[in-house]
Length: 482
Image 1 (cartoon, rainbow, N blue to C red):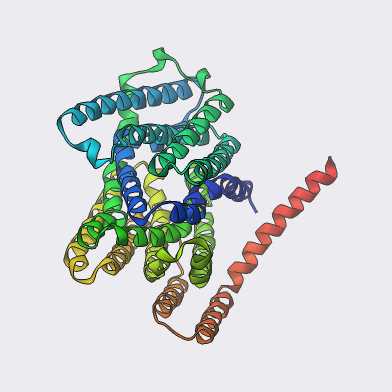
Image 2: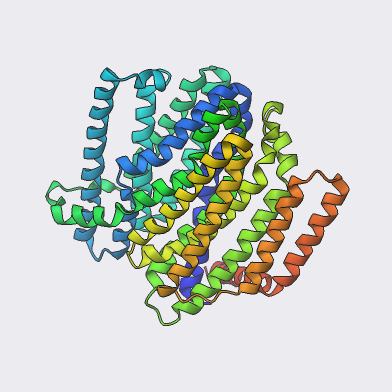
């Protein structure tokens, strides 16, 4: 096993420590949210969060991607100063301009009423979330992975504690929800600045038009990609709100949060995969190592999917109130879409490695438009379930397009027999979950599928165990030598 492979696995472990909590906190807090917030308020929060998913990248020019990518290529301290100084300059300028525009808009429109008189809190939420995103990627680009993970841990603990205090003890409702995140974001901002000593890299003299132009040239193509992805994954809730009402938005949002567990877990691997692919792209053995990583990724993703869909109903009974229990109807389809999206994300790393971020746009715009069209056609007639089917269909298209298009950058060996088998198992389990079978029959069939999956992936399991044993041996050797 090469040192780079060991570092790849170590990075997964480090990212997992922090990211698991901060990314899954929204799901773990579902019992608190669903017991302290009416479905209408929870639906409003989800619409705000959905809007922020596209607003924050636009306001910040998705500069976090550019800062991370250019810091990885930086050769000396001066390069780092230029990248970080220009990042701060762009984000500060953008926040000031957007804040002024919001104040002007609030004087001449009903935007304050639209935000239920929470406009100032929402603006603070936007700005602090934007800064957390850019600072975390700067820390990652500086290879301060421990700080990156520690920041996520602090974010998790803070949001959990403050949400309990403001929502359960103080009963502040919407204001309490927004305040818990704003204050938590502020803590994380301070921690990253202090632990990474970012003041070392901030110099007014390092701000330059050329560096700003290069960074924006790289990051701006991510914005259309994110907007298209937003149409594909998040705009569903606006259509549901219009045609079915906020109550159904609440149900759909619970299901969506559950399905994002798969996206979050795969995203941790993608973070390590990005760093690994960038640093090893020009190595002689790149294609072989990339192919092995894809094989492990495919196995891990399918296994996580199967576990999540099997424990779905029992877990929902524990996690949410009776009012939200019918959200299980949307989960199998949304989990399927999360699986397809995670697969497309693996191949999308190729665009980041070769700095061809414009290519992200074309596949995303096509699939985003497909999703919107399907929503417009079917949601008025079929309701919220049509949104889940539309999202699943669109993400599968995205996966296929990116897998084919990135062949010119990565020559990854793909075992199509294995992929087809995994897809058959996934489709079977999804439709099995949608049917109302007797519990014992359902259990037996799912168990059979699991054994089939494990049998056909026995060589991958052996390789994964060998990796783990190798790392344990290294750790034992280091301890014995000290």
